[in-house]
Image (cartoon, rainbow, N blue to C red; front, side, top):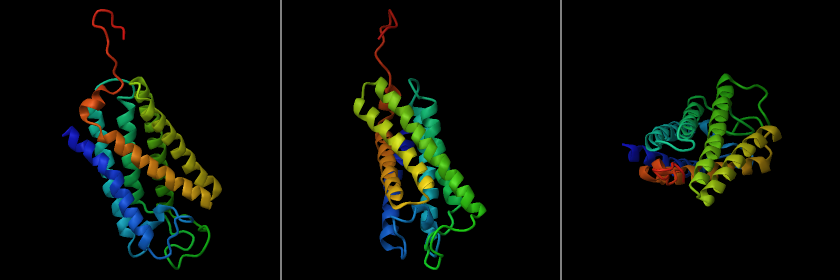
Length: 222
């Protein structure tokens, strides 16, 4: 059961990226340099992105439960799985409450920022914030866990991903959707999915011992 739950987390990222890329290449009027991926939930084919959020969010939430089962002790064994689960819940909420049409997408939408934000748009931003903050924090928690294992590569990658993920999210809001910020957010999201895939691809045995060190039974010292 634990392995099955973790595999859902491992395939969540590839599914999300595949579905988004397909829409970016085929949806009329969408421009990745101007539009956040969330607005793909609008228009005649908006159900595709809504379903993408719901399915992938469910997979990530279940993967968080798998992490909780696999990680028995060590740094972050409580908060790490909880934050991954919160990330999944944020994705589900982002699907339940779609973003508002924005800056010419879908076709027929006025250019520029919307004058008013709907309740769905506000809730979408709130759940999106939960998702971004949760994954950023999870990366930092697991960075400490990897450091304890002396896995320097994953420790650095986890920390860098967590910081970039949060900075990119804040930059989009602060710059009101500037092109460089949208592209930075796209890159950060891709890094986040790569990180989650690597984390949940580990076996439950590896995860349960992640952060553990050999301890002498006699002295209790490493």
